[in-house]
Length: 117
Image (cartoon, rainbow, N blue to C red; front, side, top):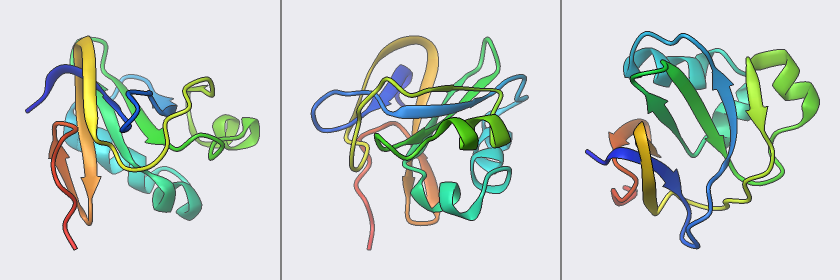
């Protein structure tokens, strides 16, 4: 498990994110990133970062996926600045965060797991 880390792409860039506040645990975070959003957002999900201290859940997307309208409709907050693209391939230090990569229908802890076919 890649504890104290946020997911990033092959160039070390973070992803755009839609944030849910007050999520009780990592399982609920995964559930919300898939089931509390539109089908479009669920299909574009790269993974998520979960903060076990603040209970923030960040659903991660490629650059340009999120819009103001999608953010306002589904999330408590969003960040549009990061420009990550493609599969999660690593992680960077971030205290109290853990990176989870979407792999097929599974979520794996750590941003360096291989994708399965």
